[in-house]
Image 1 (cartoon, rainbow, N blue to C red):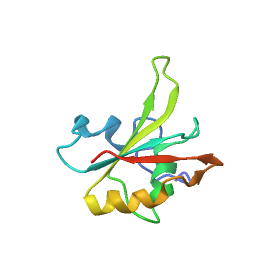
Image 2 (image 1 turned 135 degrees about the vertical axis):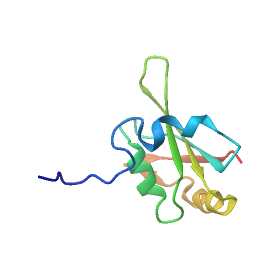
Image 3 (image 1 turned 45 degrees about the vertical axis):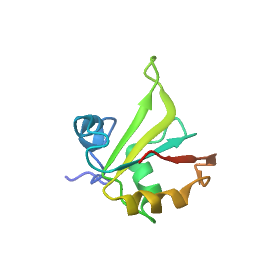
Length: 105
């Protein structure tokens, strides 16, 4: 039988193409850095959080040297306009955590 839910961005950790489509930062897309994320957040939840303003094309949650989430993520948008719209979410809350956004370009 089909399982409920599903249809997310590749499911568990390493969704969204397993860490950034070959790490092609700058080549295509515009990146927004997120700071202050809840440690248990998933790529899917980040995509949902942005969905009212723009749809990410790539999400990379950063981990520290112990493999724990650092609270930072890099979210890539297809166009500069999408990235700028995403910045409307700056200083809004996710799961009662205050999220800061930085447009990386």
